[in-house]
Image (cartoon, rainbow, N blue to C red; front, top):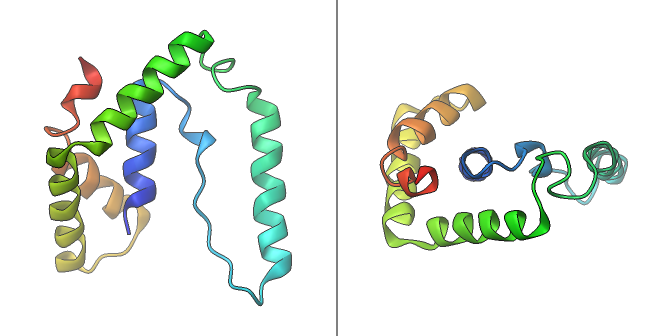
Length: 117
């Protein structure tokens, strides 16, 4: 819950297109759905091109931004903020993507400020 919102926020904040991440669910009994998810994602990546190309970044720029994102999400402060945001989502019991995105963006703004430095 909320992991996809967090990852997309981090990608946006470091200047990498959030479309490069997709979290979809399919059970073992849903092979055609799984194939559709993989096919759609592959087509999207082909349209975007190699990472950095659509973002206008050099390979060194991509590596630098990905490292910055990794450092941020590895920090204790961010993990605690994410736990608190998850608790808020469960407390509200509103499971729409918009509500979860709003909680993640609001509750994690301060802890993810490092990404905008």
